[in-house]
Amino acid sequence: MAGHEAVAVHAAADVLFRAGGRALLPPGAQQGLRYLLHDVSARAQTMTARALPRVVPASAAELPRHATNLLVRTAGKTAAQLAVRELAKGVGRAAGVGLLIDGVFGATQAVRHYRRGELSKGQACLHVVKEAGTGAIACAAGVLVASAAVAVTGGLAAPVLVGLAAGGSLVTKIGLRSLVGA
Image 1 (cartoon, one colour):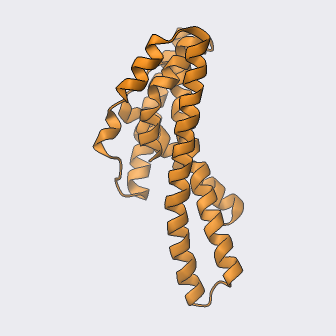
Image 2 (cartoon, helix red, strand yellow):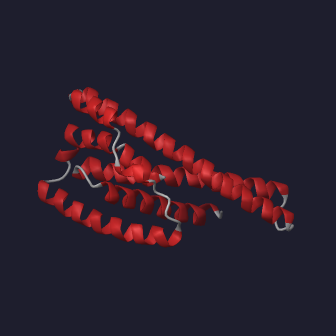
Image 3 (cartoon, helix red, strand yellow):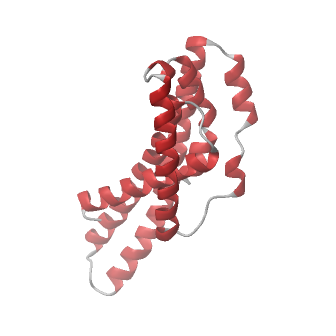
């Protein structure tokens, strides 16, 4: 889901690149980082494919045309402001989906452990909250990773965005789980 949303907000991240992100790195460094991101994305896709079932919808490869047209017609500061708003919406949507999906899985686990007597009611509720919260943060982080890559390097292909977002999300989830003990 993080990959899908990263592709959806690609145009907004590209506007941020054109509005000033391109000045953050020299062109040679941008190209080198693009090559590195392609490699990281391929590795992340492999890692994610092993860890999760393949769930990226085919429509993830298409950018929303109306958002692209709107952002292209708008110039300068206003474009950057719109882009930031679009990114925030995308990150929010991703967080909501992550919260919902991981909350459902966490609730299923909590009920199973509660019925076995392995968790009290309070512990089961806390487990659901931890899973839902880490899911929301992880999914949002994946979108931010992919969007930041576009904002600094320029456009990246949809499969690369999906890989970066999925990998960023998975790594964040694993890190948060170890941090909160979920």
